[in-house]
Length: 240
Image (cartoon, rainbow, N blue to C red; front, side):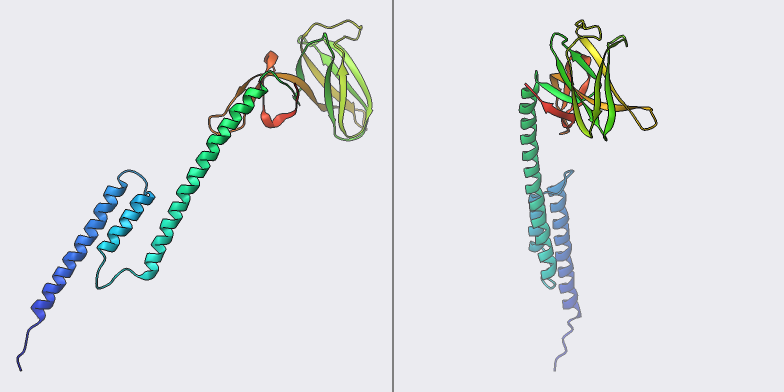
């Protein structure tokens, strides 16, 4: 019986196999480099890498089914994330458009917001409110002008917890019409010890312009008469 030496044959087959595997690995690496470059891996590049990997896989040890399914799941997740990003961008764009439309409708409108200063047209009455935290026996509102002079003191009497409204007719304590301008409203009450306790006031203001956030934040309303600005969420009432 003839004896055949297969050592050289097996070595040649193994060398050929190793060459194929090395070539496949180089192809996958080249595809990854070409597909991604300096950018993040997108769905198209991911799919291209997956197809290249399948084309050049080891024929004696093909891709495991579990690993293949895991890669498909990753591709599906990537596709879902891209779709979600598109949806979020569309929502952000619609939100910006809605903000711009809302802003245009607020300019020139009268609002009520939490503040202690107001630009007052004393030729007509103005209405403000005081936040009363608990039932008290006396509440008063002291109105001072820009120079710190007390123009009028409004006695509101006993008030229960909640919001108490007051009206200033634009006149001083002498019954004369005060000059139009910026006034400060200080609301106070007395506690059981007889000490003065400050209360929060809400006053009217007019919106002159609106500042939109470039980062998707909240709108800021700029008020007339140098009254500063307030966020949209701080507005209690929007009038005409």
